[in-house]
Picture 1 (tube, rainbow, N blue to C red):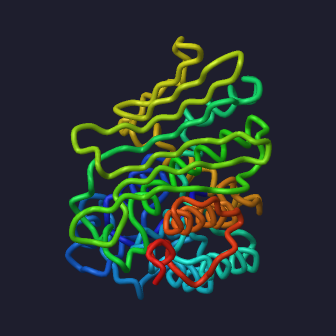
Picture 2 (picture 1 turned 135 degrees about the vertical axis):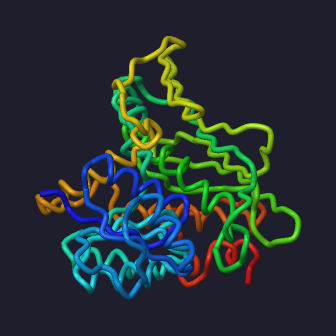
Length: 342
């Protein structure tokens, strides 16, 4: 029997998860939001009841948390204690202290929390990683996410916890970590970063990060909200014997040495939801719950990405000096506070 899904938050990403549930035939029990009007609007689009947070989990077996990141830890702990499994949107939370609490809670609740790095479940990424295994030792790794500054939400507020690297950059950071691990480069051992801010706020709008892996490989991640004329999301890794390149926009493509690599056919009425991993992610988590398995993207992976993020902000606040991973600085500070020394 398909698990029942509740939506905790009514923004754009909530809609993507709701669409994935509908494509998979998983019943939606309702959508809740801080704002009744937003809950009602999302509920109408998805054909499910509008609710308040007090109504959830109700009879939902899985609740998708897509509230602002400063609410993630408290919302997830509340839902776990109420008996629900949780899909927790990125970024995991705003401090490493909260991340530690989430890791402990997941362990106490049979790992019934999935860190929603949807791209890890995208067919183009899974194909890329399978090809990376046989590429030979990587000598070049670069992942980019470049787009315009969001015109909605509170992304540049201090309360959000961080800017382009913290919110958008967790995707390319995750892809870099996964690609390096698939190729045998080992984990990230240190980070150096340069951040660039914007007008009228304290957040970063552009980030360039160098990741040093255990085998000596240095990879580059660039994440930016200062690319108003186009959107670029891509991955490139090369070795002495070949080059793999994936692009995500406007449609996912993959090349090996310049030649197209076939991806699984997709005849979904909502191709984007499948191609970006939302259906694969929810399907896999339902299977994880049924079998008592730890998700591929578990809370510990989310904490690892936040360790890298915090190390990067700390490095940027110290003239780009390399910072070890796991991060050795304060665990009760947001990335923005680490960058600005507050």
